[in-house]
Image 1: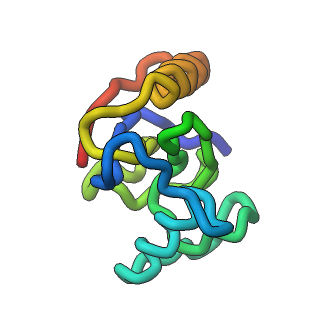
Image 2 (image 1 turned 30 degrees about the horizontal axis):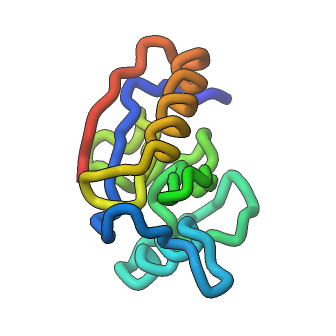
Length: 126
């Protein structure tokens, strides 16, 4: 089964610009997963078994450009009310001044996604 994807939503983590979120044995996706769990989010049937039980995004891009998988693409996200069923969510660590490494990875990821879903439109959301 393949979900219809009409939107690619780019989020920011609202964290300090230029600082990696991953540290102390946790990567950025694990930190965000912990935040989302504390807010009451939960994945019912994770499409991938990456140990993340609550993350709402499909990918996280840390300040150093590390691309981390959250939810699988066949799994509905929980990142924009009313658009989750037909969208994919990417979260950039930082707030409004992203690193060159993040921009490069984001560009590559969007181009890759547009190969599979060429009609998907890009939107920003924080």
